[in-house]
Amino acid sequence: MASKTHSLRWNRRSLRARSFLLIAVIGMVFGSVAGCAPDPESGEIATPLEAPFPNIVVILADDMGYGDVGAYNPDSRIPTPNLNRLAAEGMRFTDAHSASAVCSGSRYALVTGRYSWRTWLKSGVLFPPDDRPLVDPERLTIAGMLGELGYHTAVVGKWHLGLEWGLDESGAVDFNEPLRYGPNDVGFDESFIIAGSLDMIPYAFYRDHRPTAALTNRQEPLTFPRFIRAGPRAEDFDPRNVLDRITREAVSFIENSATDDAPFFLYVPLTAPHKPVWPAERFEGATALGPYGDFVHQTDWTVGEILGALDRTGTASETLVVFASDNGSYMFRRPEGEPDHLDDNTVQGYRPDVHAPNYIWRGTKADIWEAGHRVPFIVRWPGMVEPGSLGEPTIGLTDLMATAAEITGYALPDDAAEDSFSLLPLLTGGEWTTPRAPIVHHSSRGMFALRDGDWKMVFGNGSGGREQPPGEPFQGPYFLFDLVDDPEESRNVIDQNPDVAARLTEALATIRADGRSR
Image 1 (tube, rainbow, N blue to C red):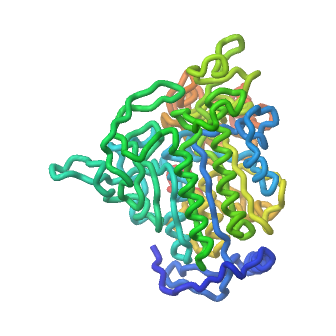
Image 2 (cartoon, rainbow, N blue to C red):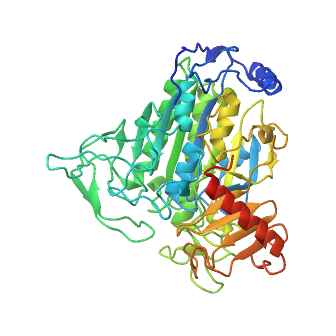
Image 3 (cartoon, rainbow, N blue to C red):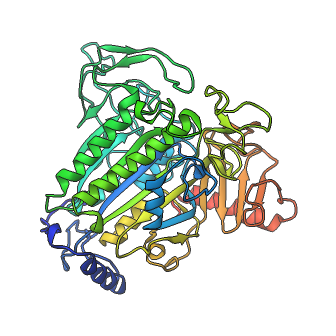
């Protein structure tokens, strides 16, 4: 990884969106936006043009469905005014995909620009304390890359990428001890995290690898909607108030960073609306869709608080904001006539006439079907992204790292962001500079699918996740769908298109074997 050998001088407070737009255009003409990038061979950071890099804020919801957001689903009965505002002020991508249909894999792809199935994690998610770090210490991350360019970097929220836990004198895991490896070791200057999902132990916050309070309490198990496992809990940890705490920490980071000369990168992986479905008391009954609807509404409120912090500090005009979800919603589509979450909040699903958390897409979280990984993805960047615009190309969460690299002029080495493609041409109203490689989808049970243009091919005989039948990876019959003619994946046309199936089979084999798609 290149070392920072030159100090970069910044004066954020004197910048204006107009000056950034001018330099951005110059950069695209001459090969980079900022002209400030480490030389891959010497490791030197060249600074031929001192440019105003944008702040970057990435908000990643946990299990928010495509159909939960009003900007994506006009029939949604959950108020999402802040996400609707973000879409109105930016670009809403309609064909965006998480790299995995479950948590850990998606987060790895976002942070590294690389598919998680290239690591040792071939299926499922990490479960503390038996997790081990998924991000190799030598791997360049988006935070590490931006840190080399002078950014102040932070993560606030759900980590779920594995930790090296502290040990007691006998060598056993001790949650009260500082972490031996975590976010601060992979590029983040500051971290305020919980280890995994909100229903996983330990129930504690870790600030810069140290617990914020002693884990002297015990969380008792609860059932859905407040599903949570039993385990040790810190004195300052209340599952109901975790989202509020994350919100306050994110807002505080923005407020503190706004007075600094350096640009900032803030990654906010939220804990909601993942289980336990436990909205703050003031949000109970805020919607007509039960606890799940209330929790989604609170998640939207969190987005609003972060946007409000940018407005109050005067940094909104020079900040690129990304909102996405790590996978689809876990709420099932209930059959007509059967009870759903609105009838009984212990039911994990809705009838389509009540609410469609995953919109029209087939399946649910964890599945290889579209509902597992097609997610809301919104980008706001004043002066660069046209307000209210639509992004229709197929993109992925892996693409954020290459996008940040092109924006800042960073020359990515060959062994970094291997599956990441810059969205900058799309964000500025153009087309891909070079055609994007087909996108690989991956389910919780390790099933693959490949998306290339209108075609999607599933390399297995079931959902690969929670919908029945789950099937088995690389066991036939396979599926081939034309998503333009059949967005709901209801007609398998593989027998009618053997040439397409052969081409996609070869393409997936090449992407897997080459170790990269970029």
